[in-house]
Length: 158
Image (cartoon, rainbow, N blue to C red; front, side, top):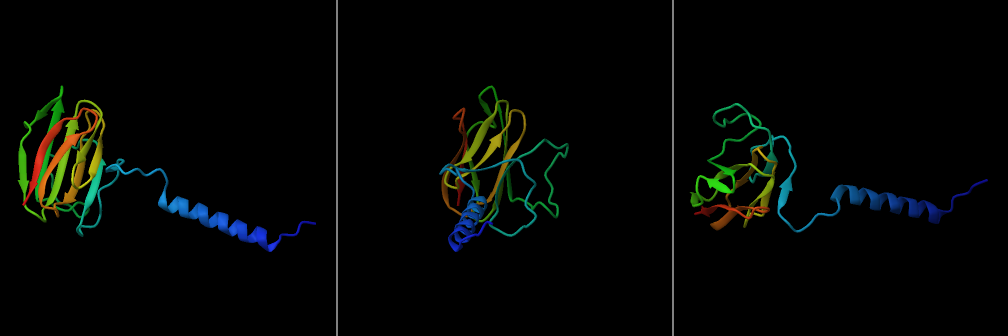
């Protein structure tokens, strides 16, 4: 006959609690930028919004606001081909509080990073990657790729 002692029941509960905590918080999260895997756009238009996605191109010629995607105030689109950035590297100015979407398409796999906001997105080769956020910090912020170390532009928030 098997009899459980109170100590065994307590350690079982403790082990289950620790496992649940690990599943909720995740493990192995680094101090690098927040990088999202491909996902669906947020369904809430409530600020602040900070999302990063890599998605397949759609045939839509211009972005449009839908119930699931809030309208952006500033859309910035960059293309990288053979290490050349188009449009050429420069400064892009936005007003504080604007909703900004940066979409980058690269001919090689890379990672987009927005300094100061610590946001990023994976850039699979030939597939646009986007990051969307509320420009709530003023200053000059570099937007670059990590692997190829290309400066795409400098974001000025006033």
